[in-house]
Length: 312
Image 1: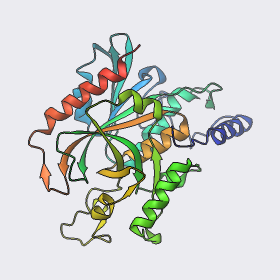
Image 2 (image 1 turned 45 degrees about the vertical axis):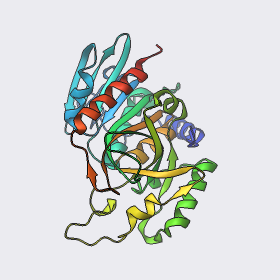
Image 3 (image 1 turned 90 degrees about the horizontal axis):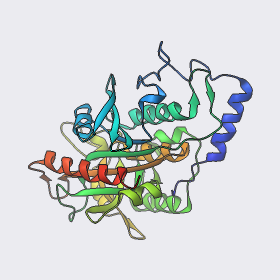
Image 4 (image 1 turned 45 degrees about the horizontal axis):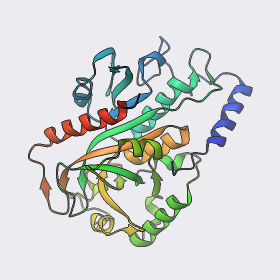
């Protein structure tokens, strides 16, 4: 993976917590029955292979392809189905919208496999998850057609979540970020965007001839943060044009959504493999919208499930 996940910092923190004793109840928040607080899950209720979707209704559209479902858990916007395809355990989970929810999901998924919840201590052996986001997105390039698939090489974080964590980035990520700053003349008082790469092994596993590649811009909102104007003027009226015209060493910004940068960043720092595949349901440059994106999303689900569960 291209993000330097700062694994040694993570291990150092684990050591500090152990020497200090248990993780405080205010930091690792659990339910009365010992489940992680927001997801309402116990460790045995998730699989090593996880599909995350934004929409709660899309969980069933994924899990209908499971051979059987062992666990169905829901709390707030977080709906989880865990079962098997053949002999492969797999989970489908909804995250809701936005990187703030991804912050919750990634930290609590990691806690389920890397923290002893009963004793509130970090486990000595690290467990890595495969986490694939399946989403819908708007294209920022003329040549990307609606109903096509986009596998994100990087997340461009316009959301600020990762700036609250101590992390280091690979050289390529820093070069892409600096090139983006120079291209856009990004206002300093709007916070610092970042670039973070997909998990290399999972990216290669999910990739195929029907996958377009590109940098996915992750916004902190749907309207102004993605250049949409209804009754309010935006601070960056040429945002979409600046994004679509950015190119650096063969990379370009291809689409907008609201989760990938935090998924890639937190996943990398926590030592998990992450990838995002989006169905392009709109082309912002051509002002087009899919006539039946549900059929395209279903194709995306089937393609990714087959690749995620093959080879076991």
